[in-house]
Length: 250
Image 1 (cartoon, rainbow, N blue to C red):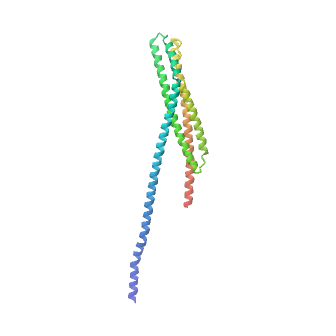
Image 2: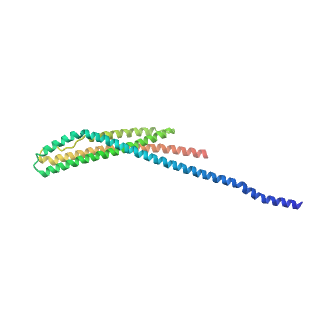
Image 3: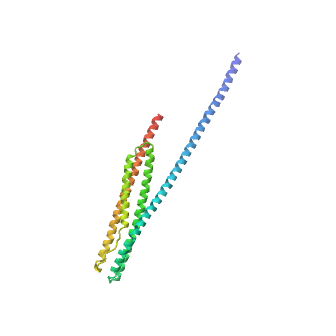
């Protein structure tokens, strides 16, 4: 009887480790499978996010390029409208310049006149490009605000900032268009007054370009304000989401 009892105990001692190993293996395999599936899901989400970011950047670049092209087209059209009037004033200037006997002074006036026209056109194109990029950036802020609002987030502060930025951009565009319509030609009276008149014309251009630049700066600041407002709203929503998730887990 004692021998039977000893044999039974020995059998249980051998069987228990085998049973434990057998029961643990499926759990370990299950945990590994869950980790692998999680890793794959995270990888897929990361790849999808990268693709979305790439698409957004490409879309923004395309939108910006189109904006620049549209602004340049509008400015070129305006410039063509003013071309006849500008040429007429310049022809009058050259005719009056012929009354000046000092050839050196006449050449200086003609050279400065060319520099003034070139600078004016260059800055018009520069301002147009800047404004086009600001408008494209504001479009992007508006699109993101729409998507944020679809999630039930209050974006009224962002809408207000966007409206202000749109007004600033419109004012800047009007300033650029007005600049395109201006013609800078020195008034030729007497030889002694040449230096003074050319100086006045050059200063008038500088003052006008500065005014347009200030309008562009205001538009830039307004667009930046709208972007910051959107970022603050989005951050607030993320904080709420994170807090809710943490509370749920706890």
